[in-house]
Image (tube, rainbow, N blue to C red; front, side, top):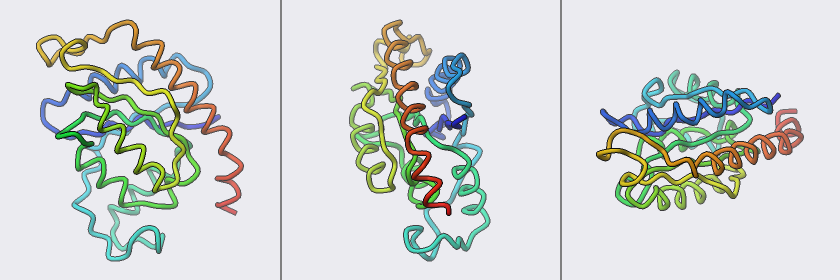
Length: 190
């Protein structure tokens, strides 16, 4: 069975992403096609990229925090990134943790659940480019949540029912792609 990490991509105090990630996990727990786990970046606070050699050139990490982060990501076959949109982009902390690694991301699948005043669309657009660069196949369907319509008083998460169908479709796509990419992961680890 494939393993999918739901990565909570914000560490900001008072973040809305925690409620969003728990909503994703609640729906994921009902599924039988994969095993899901929450990976909260607050539990993996990495300094600004401090590896002396780029991950693309070496998988021999100098720092223990990088080795631990690499081991966390290596165990998964796919990812659901839960991200806010900050200033037309993803949070810096999310980009930073992606940049730390290379081989641990390759030949895996990803989907996106975003939120913001424009549904987090620009954060997802940038994440799609980053996914291509690190060798992750991102799925077509994403879930965009609006701060004005899906959050009461911009803080209490109350998603519209229409988002559930998109979430279920996206989770199924991530599971299918993670499974389909399994031979490539096995080939690259051999």
